[in-house]
Length: 154
Image (cartoon, helix red, strand yellow):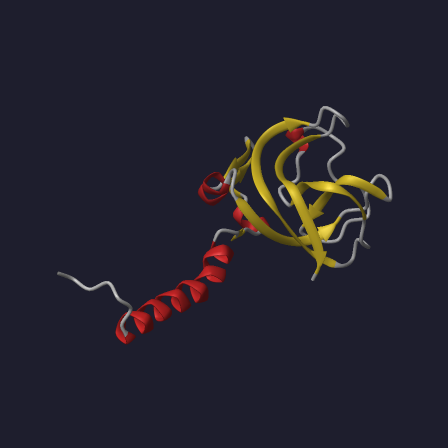
């Protein structure tokens, strides 16, 4: 008959297993958020238009982090802004997706926020989406979005 009484060996083994699980938990949580850069968005940019990269396709619907600059918003507080690769002085996405620049991403926030200065690097995290989409509230068209997002100054 097997004994299920706690022995010193079992207690130590259980304790070590629990510690290993706790030590790996933050790494697993961090691994769930993928980092993507502007150079990762498109596999091909030609006279025929933009083609999404394999990485962008694979990250669709997943949590991502991305760094860039906040383009000047249309108003001081809103639920969206444009993330750009370099600082910009004008709204970069006020036209159609045919004219979509390859170095911007629209960011839709979880809640309205007051925006940062355009010359500060920020980090955005949220769910990654690709494909032509028209915002029903504003009429703005985008090819790449990060939704349910948050941002912070780096």
